[in-house]
Length: 267
Image (cartoon, rainbow, N blue to C red; front, side, top):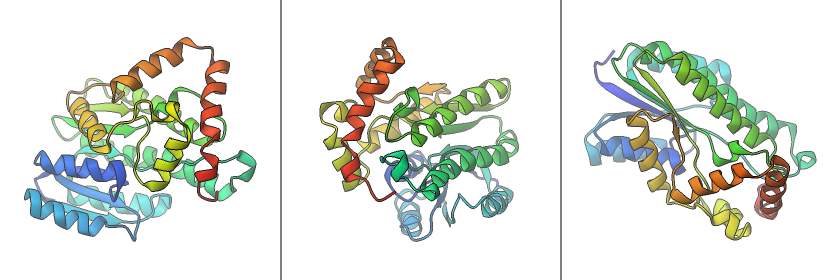
């Protein structure tokens, strides 16, 4: 095993995961990238190596395959000293529950919930070997309320929130700090952008550049903060929504989200 430390990032080929990879490399961290096959992970790794003179390794496999996930993560952990885990991989979507396939529902649960839990459990013993290590789990502002027409996604992100905070308490007294990040809307691609715009003003509240979200999340995680809500407007929105009865909050958010359906991919 190499004696160098590495940050491991899941869902690293694009969007927020790619920005985390850039942020880590800019800060002089060696990086391990995990993403689905067929993305630009290998070229991203090469570009980061050349630009920032850090070691970057890429691994492409389907994290929803639990047997392969366990095998590959154990292999990675045996060969690289990991002191920073960024659980970024996740999937969502907007559609009526009756128009959402069973495969789609199962995929959300497998990636957002099961794979995050498994990879964290597998790596905790390795993280604990370091004097100071970090786990950053990416939840969502959606974790703070049920949302019709998303249904499974906010439930999965609420799981990530609860899992992270519970784990932080359990690992207190060790060198491992656990942080959970609640990003607001992110325009990661043209489809996502159209969905956000379709919601109108409510959808664009708290909108931040992806790079800025990654910067804030990295800074606060390294400061060992427990909960991180990037963006002033998102923090205000969270506070105001918390003052409403859940039934009112559910109706307001769901009404805005329903406008996204026409821009969603087939479920």
